[in-house]
Length: 159
Image: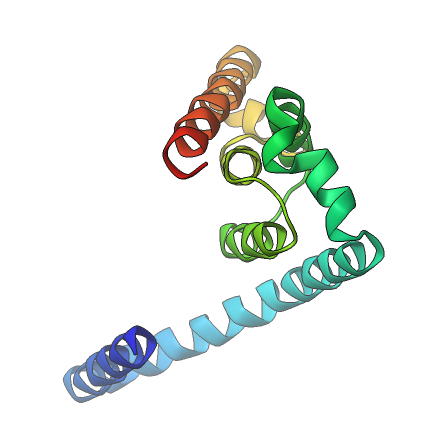
């Protein structure tokens, strides 16, 4: 039901925008389509990898590695994988949902999503060119440590 409300609201705003300025609205739609075309190959690749990994590993293996009973080791493993892996945020959340349904723990998934979205080992060199190596290192370190805080908080509330 919420999806229908949000989509309806977006369509209404698009119609209002179209009547207000047709050229800007057309340009915005073209830019949106280009962005979508750029994101889709990455999104599909990640979804396929996650689907293959989830089909290969059974829920018992996921529960042993990053299940609710894996504790600090599972949170650490999730944090390391999330720090190394790079994916868009909307894919991270759907991946987290798939992992939860396959037996992963809330704290472990929270650590994974936090590090996926905040820590960037693969993008370190690019970020360092703009912020400097020291600032980039500290930002990533603080984000990595914060992922553990988030994990323990989520694990305490939902676990």
